[in-house]
Image 1 (cartoon, rainbow, N blue to C red):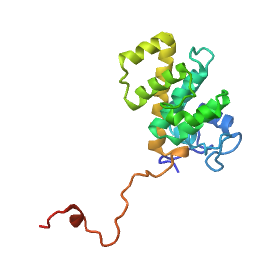
Image 2: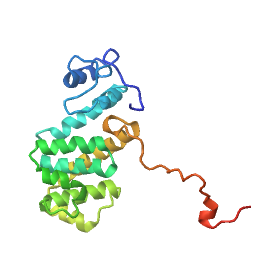
Image 3: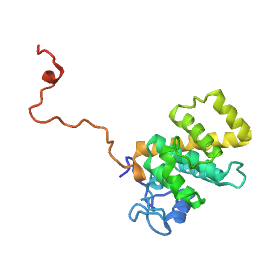
Image 4: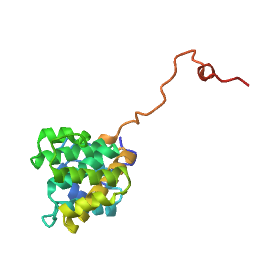
Length: 212
């Protein structure tokens, strides 16, 4: 379950949350009867409904990147979003945007190769350029070499680059928030924990230390 309270249909804000609930869940209370068409629980929405203004702002961001006014190719946009999910370790963002790529007609071969795009031969030059830039945004906190940015400038307009930068960073934020709040598929325990030593194990003997 997520770390924050989920807002039921009865408690939901009438201007913001309820219309969105109706689009996603029909007449169901998403807390009592969770589930969306994509297979998620839907608790991202019920958690964000704790702050209607925040939910509205996030939903406006979704509308922004799907707008026909965007200049960036939707497939290239989704590559940036999907890589943001993978690189941040958000199973929710990665999984959802693999579905979006598939919906845009991207091949299963390319979707499967995303985690190893650096060595995969299936991506076109523009796709590899987008993934290299997204990697620099997400994994290197925006440290983009001049040579890479020059290649971007040669391949894309300034408006396209700005849109790509914005949407990739936006989805890095969503990935981070989903992990922190444990929403949807990110409701998972951290796998990096100490594994108990066998009974009778002596750390000082192992390290060659001296007892005091």
